Image 1 (tube, rainbow, N blue to C red):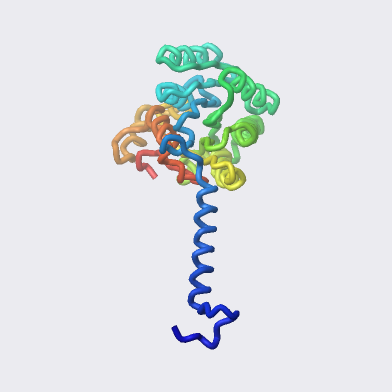
Image 2: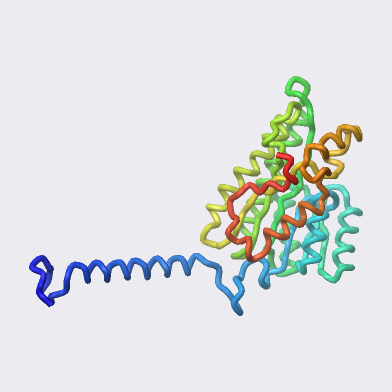
Amino acid sequence: MRKNPKTSGTDGVSRRQVLAGATALASSALVSGIAKAQPQSQGGTRQGAGAGSKVALVTGSSRGIGAAIARRLGRDGYSVTVNCEVNRELAAQVSREIEAGGARAIWRQADVREPKAVKELFDACEDAFGGVDIVVANAGVMHLAPFAEMSDDAFSHMIDVNIRGGFNTLREAARRVRDGGRIFTLSSTITKFRTAAYGPYSASKAAQDMYASVLAKELAERNISVNALAPGVVNTTLFTDGKTEARIAAFAQRTPHGRIGEPEDIANVIALLCGDDAYWVNGEVVYANGGIA
């Protein structure tokens, strides 16, 4: 081969060969970096939340969406910590139902507004089951009124439970959830509607969208996926209380499926996102609303 007069060095290696070698090294480093960023696998299965890690904690899970999520995760084989603020008997019943289905469960009373109570809730989960892999920050309240009529107490209650309580739960989850796990916080499709009388409540749910996006980045090196789940109109007392049958039916007519959602619809989406194949869904607001928005 004729020597290239522009070749550096004395071994006759061409510039093309040098560049090819550098490209190969860069590609190798890139592949190595990607491999380190991926969860480790056992037996050919990604070692994420659904592959051997089987402990879940769901706040506000004595009834409604939270209870449906707790029951569904129990059916999927997770050991579940059920939480309530005041509905002790309902929480105990959800726990018994999970155990009757063959999974392990405990229930604990804890006010998510109190950091110490949230810490003790996670302590109880770890003491009972050895750790935690799935956390669903579901506890929340809703008070509706136009701005001119919203009371200080109602506004403060939503800020304390939804924004402060959500933060307390996610902060503890960030410290406790094992690598490769999942963290969820409950947002709402109402952030799209921006309906009159829903202003402060919508703001408290929009905060969950920001929480999920930022926390996903903070936990990037631990392969923990963090998402906000935004239900639409769901058949729980949080939605139905104070509404006439005609008004509820009007919401159903706005949904392509011709009905309002059920708590199990939301639980099914959570279960889907807990699976190994949903690992790449991260830092997102996932709308589970039947197409109403």
